Length: 627
Image (cartoon, rainbow, N blue to C red; front, side):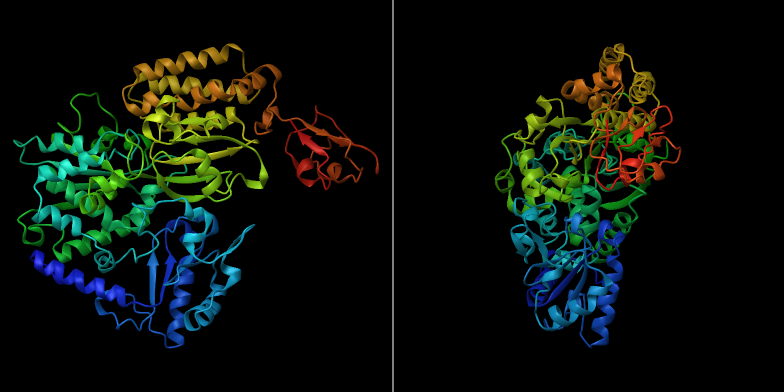
């Protein structure tokens, strides 16, 4: 049980103690225990390191509260380092070395050579065509990033409030409690130009001011959207897992600024590690008197609650989320009134997402000017993205607003896998849009993307190569949207279903040329008449792929051909002149559709072929093509 702090002076004294203890630490081993590396077995690596050090008598005390004068080796469970493609990851300090793809079998060598002898193990380092990179910051994946929200993810023990205090945690809250009025806090956030990182990009300070203006209301609420339903997105999850106190501090500051005393974190139940670490952070903060009644003796109070959602995509929409918290079915409602006037339990509610709240503490500590030093005039600051798909270096990144897609895909992502051609990026999830080669040098900020029919969304980036079928991609996202539609309004419920039926028919080879016009007509109807923002943006994947890749739709419909071979109902396997007559394809075919004599070119009977691809995958000389 931690000692409760009753004043600013006690807080400052304790924080100074932890800062000194952190400075005294010499050797630290930070084992990535974000969801990705945990799935890769890094908890086993952590335990093996702990056991081995205990066996050798190495003190691996992890708590700063009883630090042993810097003699101990700080073995810590950190949050996500970001470089998921190379996980599981282990960072060694003070050198800043990064070990990649670590296993339990590497533990003995790490302890002996690195911890005891201070030697870098080259085989665990990052290698590329330019050679070996020892330091994490020298790896190309990290070089063009500017990590602000994610600054401490991977660098601190994510389960320790002492660690957070040692890096200046809760200083911003103390400043808001004892040095600034609520209006001054809101002005600083407004002057910073911070816009909501959950998708819409609404000015955060303006939203806070609207909630604060309801001075007649005895109860107001702060709600944090940690639902993050976009396929492939994991920015908010990683932030909650890796730096939970930063999110919590931002929410408490919002409560102090707007006069709200109750906060709710809405996070999907599929994020058990994020839920556990946020609960742990709340408990630690309550024990210290940083959360709850009379925070640090200031007379201000703030209480936190966690609601776990069932994974409904529509609950990422504000009014559906508040309905879910209230215990009702998560369905959007008509607006006005908006949530700032009548939100959770019918009271004024300030609703922002995880990344937005996590941006606030540094704005208060360092000022609006510091925040505006990066990004663009209308989209200042940085943005976290989940970089996934057909790119060499997948993972969690953070870059200044206005960074081009080319920099993200090629400089940070390392280019397209297997030296294939870049084709497109799906940005903003199902509600986003598809960008192509002509957009590679487009600045990624709220306004630039809006001009080309896309949105940042929560920050998902799915990179596609030349072998990606854009009709199939559109059908995938539309199927997702159909399944996730709450069904409340007819345009979304019925319109997206009809669009999905048309797309499915096209990918199965039964499309009609009139389908293209029907898709555009349905898309316009859904956009203009759906109840909520999710419905209005639902057709975006189809419209953007039609705009940029209509020729692929025509090929599917008119020629019954999928150039990428993705749509199996349209697949045609052909044996080329490269065939050496080894007979392997005939032996692999489960339906006997391939004939030919040894050492002579074989043929495929298309009337028998079931398009399973066994012939192509088994051909030793690559003589079978699909298309």
